[in-house]
Length: 188
Image (cartoon, rainbow, N blue to C red; front, side):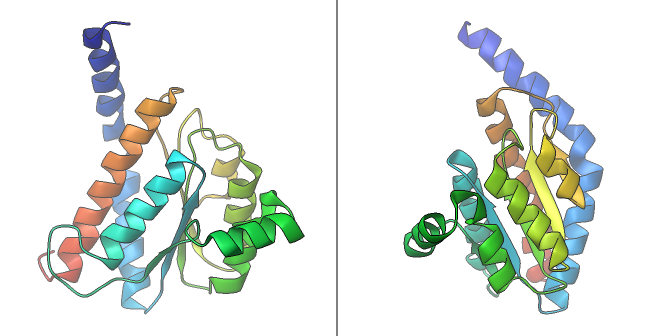
């Protein structure tokens, strides 16, 4: 595939992301409500999706564009001792669900990232978050997969290509960060 064809594919997927903006607005509104009620955001995913989860947490606990108070956001992918303990003593499929049960409280938000929606640990993590009374958000692709069934808000990119999905997840997490960042700085 030529570079021009790759770019055309990228632009086509990006144009279809416009359809997700109303749902993303709902996610932003809900996350602001979570923060107003002293709640927290927890994120997770595997591989590149773990990087996206960590990126979102970093934008919120640190800053996106504005200097403002830190917003509580935790990526459940960053503690190798906890991840390997759970994987070894229980199962890799439980690495997120077990942390969700330990940390998440009613009124919090949990955001999962997956390009396929089929990873058992992501599906179990979202299901556990719902049982804990959290608002669940799923950044997905490839039609959503089983993970979408456990999401209050599903942001499913219309593509089956991992690179395109991850690029759009980055765009979506930046759009979300902008809304929440502006609110936290009093610019909203």
